[in-house]
Length: 314
Ligand code: 8YV
Image (cartoon, rainbow, N blue to C red; front, top):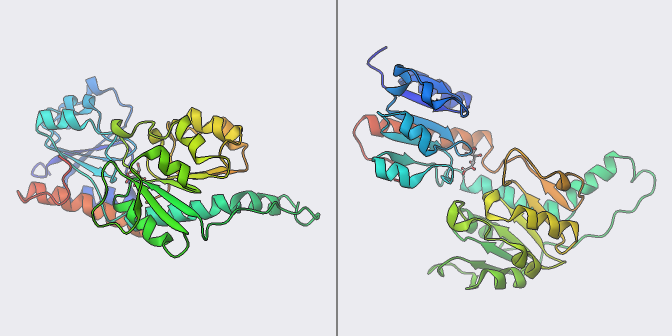
């Protein structure tokens, strides 16, 4: 059907989204590692591109698609999109905020409990038969009554704080600026936040401004009783410094859903019992992935109908 706009599915998407895109558009699948200098004229006619947050849209794909008008991201994070390049070329970008907030916050809280209460390590202990053979697991720290520091009190950070209000002894947070309407204690300095927290939950957005915001100094401020949870982006933590701090027990543990070079996880972490590892599952529920896909489609539909975009980034 030549009346239907051509679009590019950049990297693998999601079956429901694939099917709905096929109903509306002429979809060209372009692998994330494709040779962008050799795209066919039909692909080069694409007016929109859809991709996962982990693939995004580097400058090279924007330059390879001269008719590109819109990038519809299947993620809230847009750290893998060259936003400046899109802006300079007049390419609009949309993401999927809000619809995934609750599920990402749920996973953050789950990782906090799993890390502090040794849930994954103790599961391994039971499976290995050690409990049956009389081994006594070590006593753990506790979540209830502890001081929870949220690094980045945005939509997801607030949803995490709200979930932990009943359990935490205190919730504190650091943002670049104090949030006018947040009922939690603001800590102006990120290192101070780590120092005053039993658990530090990283919920900032990614991108260059937050790159390696959590460094060795911040981990040392968190200290040997402190745990860190990251559901944001691996790039926000200096991963080498994190591995070293965990190996030397300068922090007590980590619950990680995101990594600096996904899907690669540092080998050293795999052997550590005080670390809980997830393969980037924050938004990965059936229900929310559907809602994310619907929001991608609603943005595309709006664009091709000449209506305002629902959730523009650019
Ligand atoms: C997705 C995400 O898992 O929304 C985000 O920013 O990181 C997740 O929802 C991601 O888009 C998958 O690549």
